[in-house]
Amino acid sequence: ANIFMLVLGLGASKVFPKILKIPEEILMPAIVVLCLLGSYSIANSTFDVLIMLVFGLLGYVMLKVGLPLAPMLLALILAPIVETNFRRSMLLSHNDFS
Image (cartoon, rainbow, N blue to C red):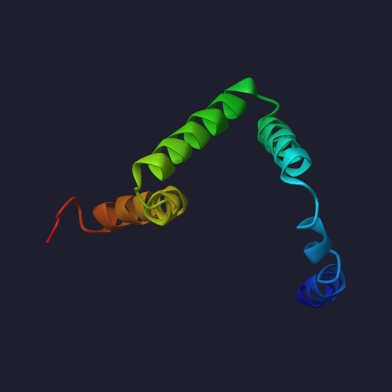
């Protein structure tokens, strides 16, 4: 799988710079449509699309206010892992925080 990704990445490295030459008026709506389709196709649920829109709006507001987006992104990715390991540690320690 890693060798396949290497070959795919090396082959696509010639195509990706050409994507940057597409006008923004065409590229941004295409990205929005792909995001909507991707979020809907995960579970065929419009709720997923709504969640994607809410977090997109939150990210836009954070960008306009001047808040950094990286900490929120890290929190969204790492929160389930932290929660699982916290529950595991609480079970092993019999709910003792020390």
